[in-house]
Length: 347
Image 1: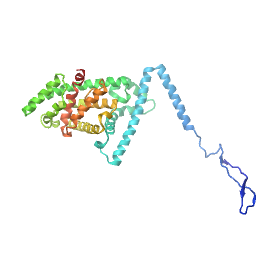
Image 2: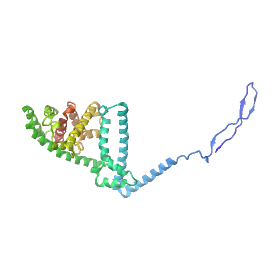
Image 3: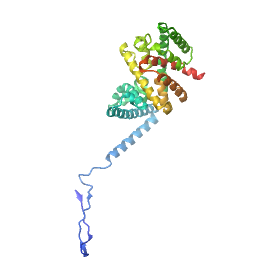
Image 4: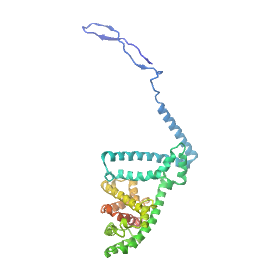
């Protein structure tokens, strides 16, 4: 149903005779009672009301239960961050599909986002599924309170927890560093070339006595890591498990799968290194620099940004000279270059 009204207007006819003529001008004015009209602002009203109630609820939690509010706000922020990253990863996947781009052809940040998101989502999937039903997020809060490091990813950690947990993970990784250095020393007598034996012995002694090795010293012994006894396909199960812990991979798999996963992950890191060389270490933010160092074996949580940049440039200097086939040398270099770097800075 709609309302209309008429209007008198003047018109000039041919020949110059002027007279009045009634013109009907239909002005459409929809009636407020029209069945075709839709109520406007209902959705925005509901959203604003929900936002108001949520803000009031958060203020109540912050005032009455500050500890629970910290967990609640951390969870909500982390969940939103995870959704944003999922959207960005989806766009990268579309780019790869539609433009025929391979993983190693992506930019450094795109490559790193894909790598990290894949690892995060595998760990976060059970928690996200638990939080979907109504009020089930309170179960997640309990998990966050009692098992934050074991069950949650970095998005759901507080800033203090991030620093604390990264330290814990690195201390666990350093236990494997000791085993790897011991295995490296034991393998030296099996190297056939005497000059290579001497260089490796000097390198191991240098690291065990607290010195930081030079890139040229590590590259000089590269031939020992392409075949027996230190090539990736020649490492025993104990060594494969130690390197799996260094890369934060599960060591509870048969040797064949451990070997394949290590080769795949070190190839991924090598591709990241190539992309980072194109971008330049100076273009990375403080967070990106520290994360890049951490995944390559260095505990960067207590280092300055400049110290991290220096170490990362040293790593890239070595990585750029190596091929993907020299995966074992890259794995051992994580240990050799990271073990005493903190001590070398203090000196």
